[in-house]
Image (cartoon, rainbow, N blue to C red; front, side, top):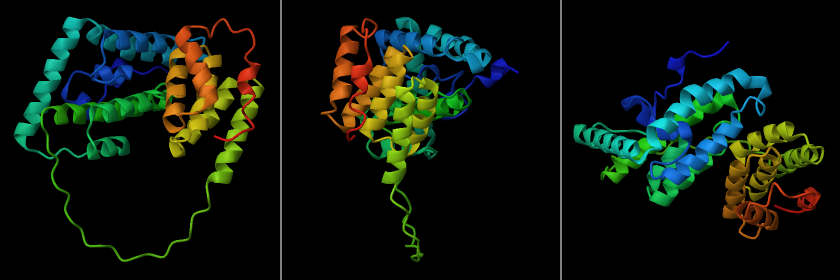
Length: 285
């Protein structure tokens, strides 16, 4: 059963103050220009194509038609985007003038609010957008996190100063059992993902890697494997983002460097043999 159109509306973050948060729906920051918006739209058109999501074809089509496409239409034209950005600034000013404390709900926004710079905001948006539509049952939840990021970016851009946190008394120490190291579990999951990659089981590999992202988002190897999955699913835009994330955590990652360079040169589709790009899988992250 498909969702009704009213379900495709963001009710948190900036979305609760506007008709919809179009930038969050697209997974781009409020600083994005027409070129970036157009590129993201093309990536999403491929991701949400029924042939790419055969098990969720109906829902994918609805997300594209009722959520992504209206957002693109609303903010890609320069005039429309300028008017929407003016509205966003007015919303931020009104919230600051009212003096009501605005509390971030999501960890990503909390980290950004602790150091609200433009690069930190853009990195946070692109990191969330990387998996925004990977699992459609979570797409709206991720969009709400993006919308909250957008709200706090708009607030800080207008001079918002968050209230000082109340100093709570130190809690009594509670004995805890040391957690088991996560390295073996990480290594096991990575090996499982690599096995799926070598067997060309892209969707199975994607499922494993998506679970790893929740706990190991700072692992270069996880992002590199994710980039290889997207590359073989002909999602070049998503692959590029993944390889860029991999290099953020390991600037010497040769596989990410090599694939990113070929993506930039537009040479990916012309490769006849991709086996050489799996030769590193027995190495370290």
